[in-house]
Amino acid sequence: MIKPLLTIASGNPRKVAEIEAMLGPLPLEVQRQPSDLEVEETGSTYLENALLKGQAAARITNSWTIADDSGLEVDALSGEPGIYSARFAQSNEEKLKRLLNALGDTPYRSARFHSVMVLCDPEGNSIKNAEGICWGEILKAPVYQGGEFESLFWVKEAQCTYGELTQEQLSKLGSRGKAARAIAPYLLKELGL
Image (cartoon, rainbow, N blue to C red; front, side, top):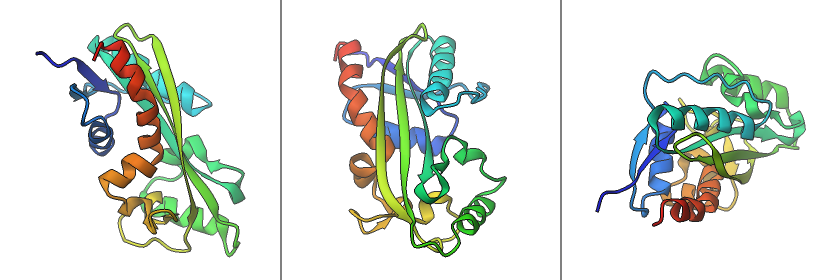
């Protein structure tokens, strides 16, 4: 039996591997979007940005496509950096420094990773969208070097940072994992699996 093809609308190999692992049990052939596809994220919401990426990748590959957009929302910063998380600063080190400086010594450090995932058909029509939220708090310093926001985002349920979650924990507790689980039944239905 030929497995249906699913494109993950991302050029980020880590994100593709994470989503592919979450969909692992499904009988699909997964590919990443074409390397020359650049989609400018001009939306004002996670959903708008996910749709921009998903529709573009679906039309170019003529395949079912999953896309997501996500960000870190810090309550004490009125939900920032939010959809601008990837563009919060030039480097990961600068992102962490800017975030920690903005929080200062405040004890109010609650935050969440928020993801919105969309499923598009091969023509680029949006079939379903889902969201996932992982609640946590921002530590005063990263737990390990070389990470991004996930190195200082503490997930109480797992007693570790987001970046230290196992693949199984990411699928269960992670924002992208929750969104993928919510969208999986629709994907199975649409592909007749």
